[in-house]
Image (cartoon, rainbow, N blue to C red; front, side):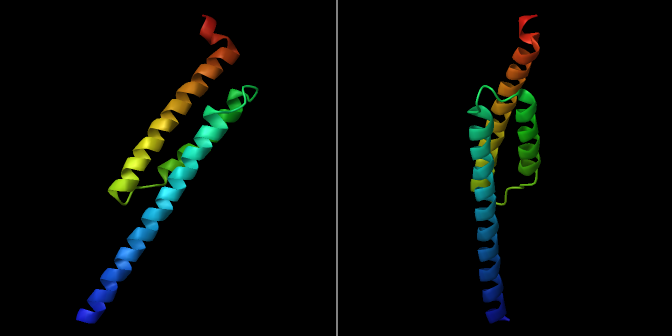
Length: 102
């Protein structure tokens, strides 16, 4: 029982580390897409296209439930970046539709 417990504990730690690493990589990829495809997008890109990207990234972000404090902090950072991107796209949409002049 002692030997089995040792290997079970080691396996659990390795699994948790792998999940945490995968979550971190996924969050970093989402953050990168937010930056390159939305926040630094070519001004010629229409807001409709940016909204579609944001919808996909929102779904991806929602699938990640942080398993460690480190991943939780990263998740919060990416969520803040997402909210910043949403605000930027809202402003762009208002400008494209002329609502910003009302």
